[in-house]
Length: 346
Ligand code: FES
Ligand SMILES: [Fe+2]
Image 1 (cartoon, rainbow, N blue to C red):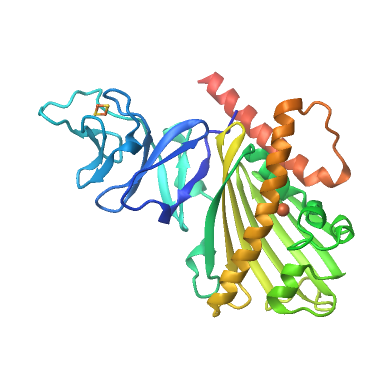
Image 2: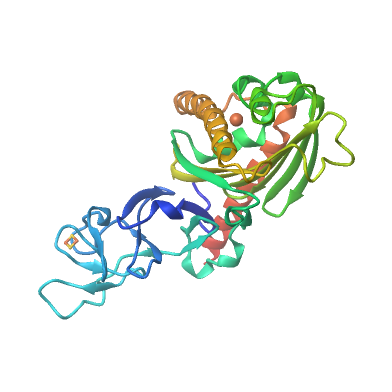
């Protein structure tokens, strides 16, 4: 079960150039492509003629051409050309999904198109601020549900165990971090403070911290699958009601989790370098460090999914550090219930 009346990241905008791309989203086969004007479109990946997947075709001036008998479709899913005949039957069309290009993402709406309001898309302006926040991005296919990956990002006590050699460091620091949490209509925001703590290896490699540091992680979860993160650190003692604007280390991460199937998902993520923005080598090094850390997450979460698929969840126990994770799950469950109710009412 997925929330359908919501915007999900379907792809990075730069993934779609002159070839169609097949991607299963919320268990539906979708084909993404760009028309001759450069506008991206998303259609059901099945031709309305004989059912061939449209991603096997190609993009021409006229639109997306099915690779079987050449029917051609525009971004709205309308058939605009049939080889050998002038009349195009009324029913010759393919379902189109609302798709919006914004902040380097292609956002897709898998629910009722009448409810798709682009104003509700998560805003991430830092992707456009290449001077102050130069970024790099990628996508990891993950063999776990999207929710297990969101769980992972809502309970950062895993850093001291999963990410010992990268962004983690000492487990006690993470368990004892002071946490300020604010609930929001579509999720929550929390900040974790780790004052006067030992810097993790990634931080030492990034800016050469020698002594202890004041460190903060700010997270915002926006249902169903976006997490906005700002991490900052400076020498111990720098903290005064917050860390300084020009802290020695500052980076932003975007995490977008999009369901593929019930037990697989796409992890769209980016790293933005806010501490040495003029230095491309730093932007690159930050991306590499985080890529290594997220591979560590992938390993543990995929193994977790395999166990849960085999043995179920009924015997699992919640602990104190699950509070943010549990609030996230309750929010998602509430939105799922609201969607089911409004569908039933219609
Ligand atoms: S199946 Fe697509 S044109 Fe025939
Ligand atoms: Fe992690």
